[in-house]
Length: 114
View 1 (cartoon, one colour):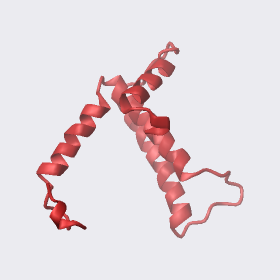
View 2 (cartoon, rainbow, N blue to C red):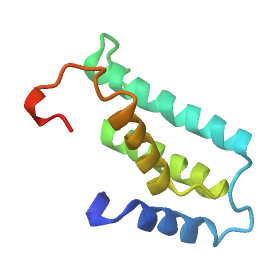
View 3 (cartoon, helix red, strand yellow):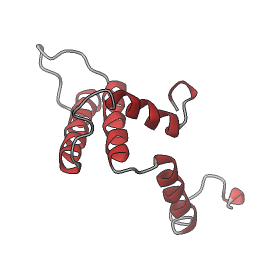
View 4 (tube, rainbow, N blue to C red):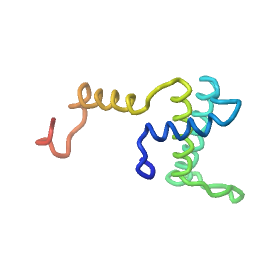
């Protein structure tokens, strides 16, 4: 994680930040809209960097890293607003990939199968 922070620490840091404002977290629908907006901004940067669509001359510099950071912040806000522990969510999805999907893709080192 960023600067060696755990996901729990990131969630607490975001919660401390948001908790200082009367407005608090947005509603789930607004969070989804914000998440979609940030994903669109990431897509735009990916398209500028890897795709065929160059930036306009009057567009300011942004980076994929910056857009991923924005997306992560909103995702953490979304999870926090719904009291979802992202470490547990991550563990659940990794368990799914390591069980249900364990033979789905071709392994680089088949002898290291668990």
